[in-house]
Image 1 (tube, rainbow, N blue to C red):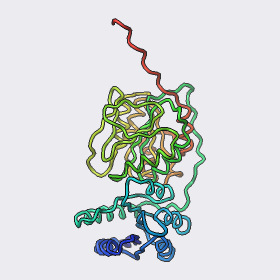
Image 2 (spheres, one colour; image 1 turned 90 degrees about the vertical axis):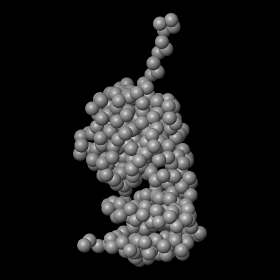
Image 3 (cartoon, rainbow, N blue to C red; image 1 turned 180 degrees about the vertical axis):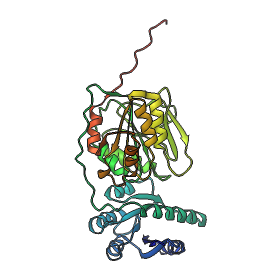
Image 4 (cartoon, helix red, strand yellow; image 1 turned 45 degrees about the vertical axis):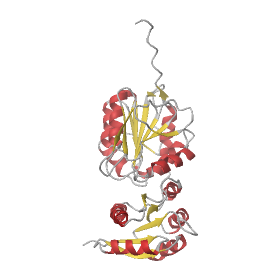
Length: 346
């Protein structure tokens, strides 16, 4: 039997710590090696215990989860799972930018909510324990591929999961407000956190960031997110198609990119960024087969390299780029001019 996952739990509620300790300790593959009541205590225990995974409450008295994340990643890097009671704020995403891997919502207090939270927490801990521990991120010096002058796209899709918010932040703030085509983002996210992601990206991006609405036509120079717990696709007339998500992975990057390949053909563009698993490779391949532009984040610059590696392995693209190099590509692309009006009387 492999060694149990060593977990440090942090929460300012003694009752919550007791409940979670009992729940996790009942699992043969998990060992709770310590509990902390605030950020300062979590930093000290991280240093002495060196656990595999740390859960951090986002909002705590004294040093909050963001401050604790910054200290831990600077002193004793560890896989950090943020637990937020206020998913509509940007604090969790600032912690992700500081090095945390994932964020999940706290229970509302009812016993059944706590039980469901325990299941989600256990699943997230097991998932993060499989993520290679990155102690220093490579900023990447990859060169942007040379494009044929006048290369046009009708839209560009970005797919990301764990580590994606950091990559998106590095990319979006380098783009001009005058970008002549829309950007579509499929960032895997826990239900309830889309509003917080929207607010955080809006604070970083020169481009307006919006949550897509069904049947809406996308505007050039605008970044679009899928609505909470929904998939986002592009219809054959270029309009947004929104559908309720099922399963555990949403919004789907494969659905978004494949729909773009059908709607835009050779004028579709897409990139797969940091994330675990293989999501996005199938959709990116569809864009490549349609003659569009495809890219994968350079695995050396990823917090988690699984998704870009899958895209490269499956020949969905030949181009590996850092977020900064991808921004150079996006700045060089031109938009598709609007169709001329139909002649009157025809």
